[in-house]
Length: 450
Image (cartoon, rainbow, N blue to C red; front, side):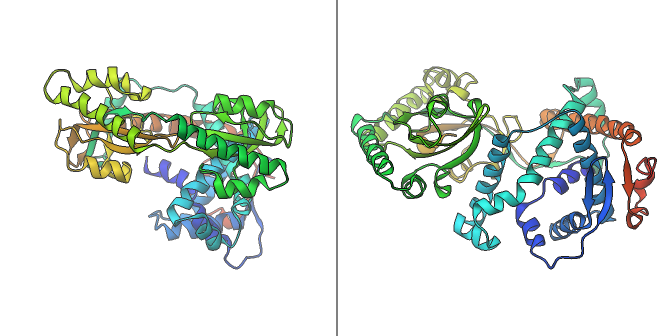
């Protein structure tokens, strides 16, 4: 299991260390392997080697391990090419944007990121476009190989019982939380103010000012730093109202004001290709007035007063009164998007929620506080600590979903390894002599020769 996860650490590598490695003095490059129509370069190996050494990954024969990971990836890419598996530019753009935003948050800002690399955001993204595309295609190929694999409860129990005690993970303290959400009402004046600003910006753009510059200055969306550019998107990847307006535009055209779940936009169509559009936008959100804030908090206070007086349960209150549709029908229970379970390690909570939850006792309900939803909209909520567990060795009673996921990953890994063995015979593979001493090479990689 440990090796399986480390393989993806290798392939899905950290941008920072990879870029730092690429800035090192260049060696004279050469091809060290051919897998079907794909090659592996010495520089590929050296770049990953520098990265994993910096991460202090404890693997013996590290270069052989990295080389094996690349061989497996190229084998999948070669088969994906035969099977006509592709990913859209919009998918690549979306993943690149997510990665960029993550690292911008980590390093402290776009300017700091660009200074670190000595390149613009767009240049950094282009440097990683092909490797990102390869990663996404590899993931699709793996999904095709493993299909809709599931594990039964008996398989989960057998997997857990067969684990070496030393390989059973230690689980940090975890919490389960429930919430009741209230969105503040937006005043007509606040909405009017935003629309007036957008109309003025649209007028300035139509008179010749740069949409991109005005987006940097005024947009309240995460793409503001990139001039409002959100890359290529399919209709299904966009908010429905945004998509309807974007697909109705001609290239270069500017939309009227569009209301979406994120706020209010004006949109410019940069390009169109098949069922995808390339757009930029300026997003503005009406301000929450002090009066709206107080009304939302007062509403939550009234609901929680009933709960604390045992007039109703928190679960019933969440179902009937919470304005968050994702949790209301689940008794207010919040699902961890990273794991799919209802349990969070405290470090997985955002800072504000962490500060609220850390001091609650099980069954205790917080006072109302301000937060934001996945669309960046302001909301107010109360949370109830449903459960808290102390650090412990994973077990089937407390951590069934975790162990189920581990068993499923192992089953998928076994299927992929069997698939690799069958494809080794059907694919042209050439291994440079410098890597023929790696132990894994004997496992089928030299069956096909020049």
